[in-house]
Length: 523
Image (tube, rainbow, N blue to C red; front, side):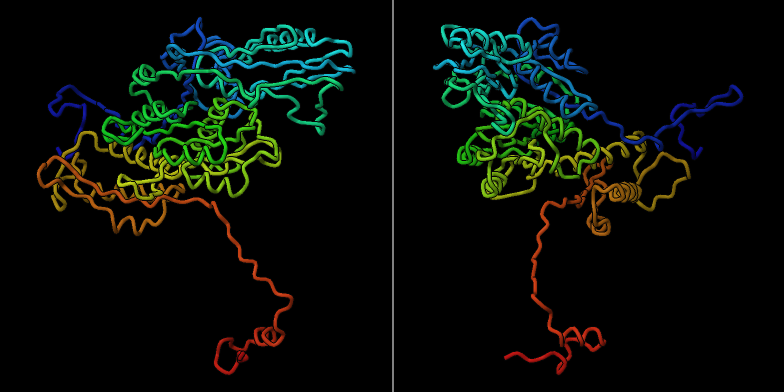
């Protein structure tokens, strides 16, 4: 019996018509490339901490981890940038023995005229109306009330005599990234302090005193082998970066390792001066982690930058993993004021030192400029750009998943023979040559879909062979040429005030240019 059946017995005697359905030649890869948001949660939520759960609305995120929590604010930023792709969340407890960040606003001089204080906390606008006769104590009380009435802010306010103390709702270092400022849009936007009123804000424009980072050990263990392709992780301390690289890296037990084959990327953000970011970036070297650099003066907290970056990356890479992310706007994220933004030299330096870069678009919203990973050096410490860009691994993951789907669907239960073996049609037998043809066919399809190029060179370098020491094993050297992206368009504008008239005459008359005796001699 030449045809290989999977289910119908060869010795069946009962008539008449029996059919088994075989989907091995029909299926196409269908993957839900999920995002995962991790961050600090408040107590009292309706889901256990350190357990990933699917989230579909902002209300669910608030109920799970508390309004105003780091998790809640991250989901708000995520949903502002991605309203369609699947996202999960995993809240973690506050760090053990951590402290919450604080900040103080002091009203030093009362106003002489009525007006509005345009207060910004963590990038959120809180207008506070004041009267011409209001005292500092009255103003502080009104300010605290206005702050506490915005239930999704990451702080709680307490008023005292002429002052307001802000307390982060959770403990940890990321509370130090909550900005406190006024008049973000300035006089052009109609934001100016009431005449006569003066006030002092936290010296650096940021809250201070937050101590501690979450422990992600239990979170990563709870993830198991659930697929999470894009992780928003807003901590850039060495411990957090290392533990997430171990989970998503290329070791035997990493998600990019040969045993798990889950793949994926981790996105984060880091606030700092140019020199501080350069110094930090030079110490990082993780191919699966991309860290967006942001200016000190940006009003939006680092955890919201992280969520927005992840959301836009997921939304774009799910559609096409090979297209660059440049120009994708980070909605609801506030850029640094114009005079405080990174300039060209600084952006180029950051991108050369493992930092993903952004710049403000025409709408004043920050947009992705280059989605660099922190990878910069090979195992010997030499410069290497193999994993420099997020799109490289995103494209490779797509290729490998396409290949795995084809192989596991079509050849799940087959026999292996040498090339040239004569076997009947319909037999469940495969040879190295058949596998080679399958890989070439898949590559041509991937080339048609814009993931790879140079199929001829691929075929010349593709090797498929039976293992000399294990007759049941096939070894493949798979050499894809990943498609690249248009990132630089360089033009040499070699202008003239007027072309040589004699040369013009020669060209239009059809005379051969370049023949000896035709072109004029100079010198």
